[in-house]
Length: 388
Image 1 (cartoon, rainbow, N blue to C red):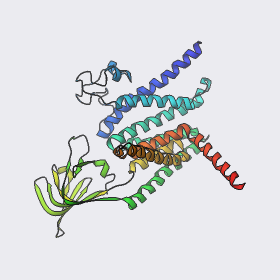
Image 2 (cartoon, rainbow, N blue to C red):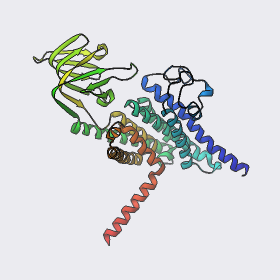
Image 3 (cartoon, rainbow, N blue to C red):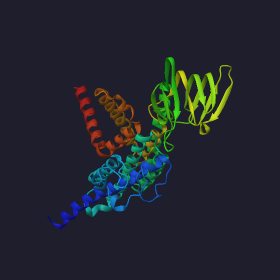
């Protein structure tokens, strides 16, 4: 093996390991961002259980988790395999991006900036997807902040959106972001009108409650023994859960035969004679009762998904927006179908739409043009056969 081939092989390994290192940082983002914590302070990673800061020699991407067998070196508590998975996935995606856009090293100035922008893009997708899976939210720092980065990237590297002029790159990126925002927002609003409520009726009064076992996590609604995450019910401030209560208790106050409206940040109690009382949920430490009917707001996706598609459009262009929506719908249908076939339909229900959008965007990034060429060829052949 020549020195050039040896150096080339080393660079291939280096790009993968760089991705794994970025994945280690993304684990910090995934853990801290939805909890309102700074991603810079404390600077070093720490065990989620004992909060002990992890020394540098025990924080080597991929290697440390395997050597420690997924446990904290200090308290021996289990460390989620998600940490290993994010590092491995990010490393593979970084290398896949290099494999897709890389070329002759002499032309690095041409493909290097494209690779750097796409590395940022896949990092945003990975962190957003895992946050969405765990917390059912897509932080604005990732979606809106990512859109700004996408607009800047397409302006500096217009080839990202299929252009060769900086101004056109910016305009196409902006228009594609608007298409992603407006198109999916319309779908969400129409879906809200058509399927916006789910009603439960009980022959006998069923117990319900709102609790918050962990102060760092959103509350949990328990209805007839089944738990619902706060993000499963609420996606916007206007959402409300309407509960027909045989009995209701909020802190030390009790009611009978009232209707409770539970909003994201407040509780309204309406008695049979029309009297209305309102409380801020921040001051309510105990909320429980029995009910005969509950109406829960629902929708296929939240506004965070709309903003995520806006970000995807800003990086990859309008064709990617259309492809991503179609591919995400197919992925979601297939996963839900497979889960149902093996008797685990709840698995498919627990995955929000954001990761499917991310998968669709990655599908366009790596194989979109090939799929589009194949489809257009199929359509052309079909038209020729129809003429004959």
